[in-house]
Image (tube, rainbow, N blue to C red; front, side, top):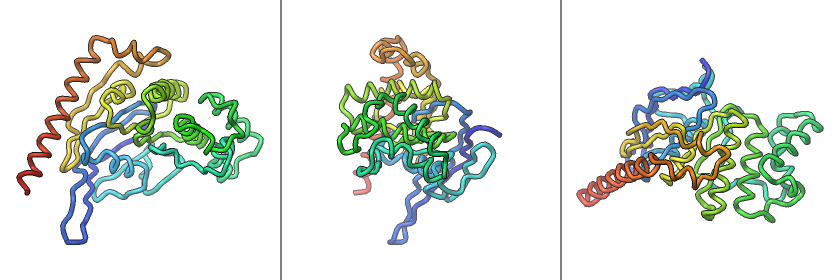
Length: 268
């Protein structure tokens, strides 16, 4: 079976005092190859925990992850991760950062160099190949992180708040780049975000998760990601359904936050 299957995933963290926290409960969903899914929800809903399980960084308490019919038991190059901070090697050049994965796999040097140079052109860093990472802005570093992920040719790209630390203008440019790369590469992408606007723009599928325990509260299938490919995202936001869906999701998450606050006050 092709695609990504998340089968009845639950995750419980045991605490030193003998208690436990149920981070996820019975999460099930399937992604076809090439789908772009954004995930949002209030703090503590298990978004990052779910992403780390898909990446193979965490083993779930119950359930399993399958990619193309194979059971996921740990990290693998078929699942690439882009973090909120680029997690780059600052002492290396941009080109060496992007080519790190293929070099570790023993790929042909000439082919790797050609591939890396192509990817850096794609993400708009063709003139910065020999620059050290510390010389780049935050937005440029995230472009390097995207190119480095793509250099490993993963089937699935996992993105954990990759644009959260960027200023508004740079973030909008990076959102457009993510959509461009999604369409051009055909990769399956799961993107975690706290921004409702970003989730709407970058998710042809959008999951809203509810907390305690983390679970899927609602799923949307949206037109905005397709509309945003090659178009000014500010124009996409003028779509008649955009504001309506945005307000609906904001109210949904606000109600969850209110419920969480109510629980906390009751516990005190």
